[in-house]
Image (cartoon, rainbow, N blue to C red; front, side, top):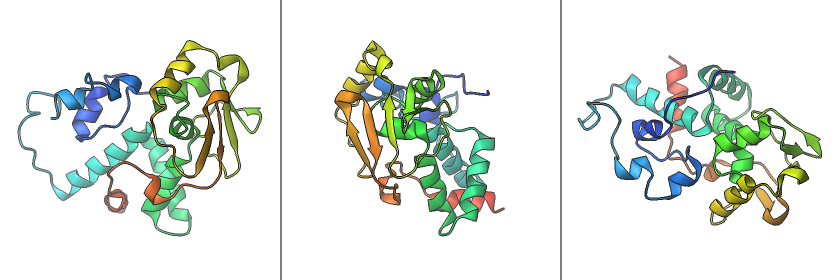
Length: 208
């Protein structure tokens, strides 16, 4: 499976916004975008000039990197969103928000989406009492997501819960941190997306 192997802090700097890709480090003074709030590279501190296409591309890249999906996956989500009722851009955001790795992160049971993906792949996560090993699994309303009992006492899980203790859990999720489990009590809305993104620019990019 293809995956990003370069320094993820460069991605935040490139998009000019904190994408919370590094887990605990993103909440400390060591966060790269707090220390160097300009794009990486020799021309990083120069004032960029973006064309209309460039602005649209940056919005797409920002959204794709925020949720940790690759280009082919992202195109598939866009096609799926286009077949749904309602605004395509908003449908796209809500599909990405329902990914299992994102739900685990939103519940505060993982310090980052990358860590959530790792735990799902390593068979530590159950949905509705069944083992799920696919980070892209779309959760439904009423689903119970939990870290399996044998994994709850691990130091990595306990550290993640401690780091995310102050995180605000979205209203469509209910969490029991003591038992490392949560329930999807509803479906996400546009207001639950805390990333500053103009999804209409993404729609315009793919409509060219």
